[in-house]
Length: 95
Image (cartoon, rainbow, N blue to C red; front, side, top):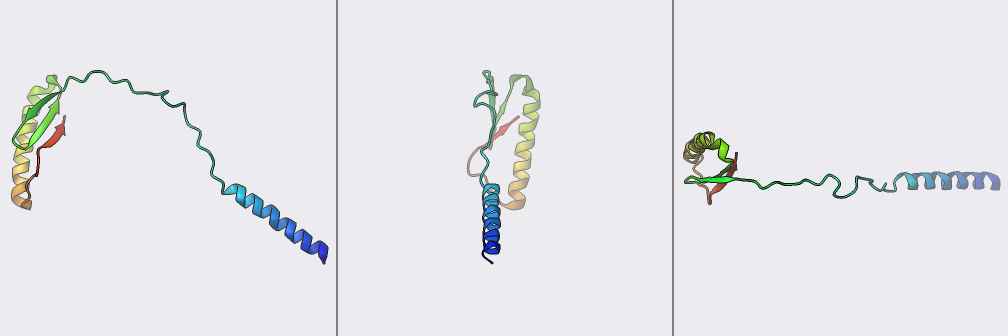
């Protein structure tokens, strides 16, 4: 009888240790900090200011940005009429 109890207790202890080890957090190994560091160049942004938007763009995209500015203002007008909401401040757009 005592052997049976000792056997059950030792089995229970073994299973408890296995479960405990199973639920321990595993430390996360990742790459060395800063190894894939992004190197930024100087961005040559321009800003086109419309009535409701500040549009940030590169100089090579000037013609496209002017069209996008007209469309943004047009859609803002439609949006504000339909939903009856106004913007509280100028909104940035990045193209």
